[in-house]
Amino acid sequence: MSLETFLGLTPDQTISAWHLWKKQKEEDSKRTDLTAWQIARWQSWVNLYPPEMKEASQFDILKLEGDDELKEYLKKKKEQVGNKPERDERRFRALAKKWG
Image (tube, rainbow, N blue to C red; front, side):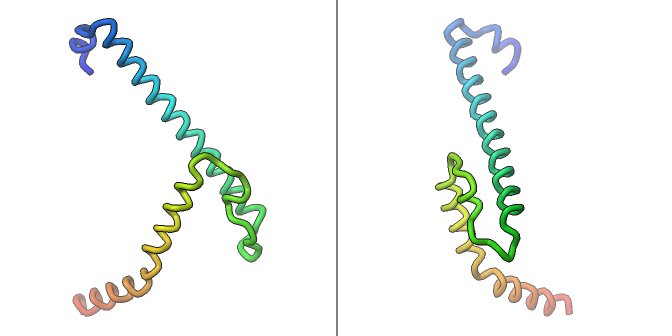
């Protein structure tokens, strides 16, 4: 927003813009905090359960807001990547053939 636009706002428009700005800042802060908690949870999970002892998932360590959406995203991602080795091999063969 330019200075001229800002100076041309009515008091109601200024208050409305401030509320929207404040809401965005709070959402950004909440997202930053949640990301920090997710990283801490993942690090705890890695330290508590070495690869040979993976009996619990990182979601079992600490429940956080948005876990359900994250689980769905990871499930879809895993399904998409499921056939990746074959796709990578086909691509490698095609490039090897192309470049001789």
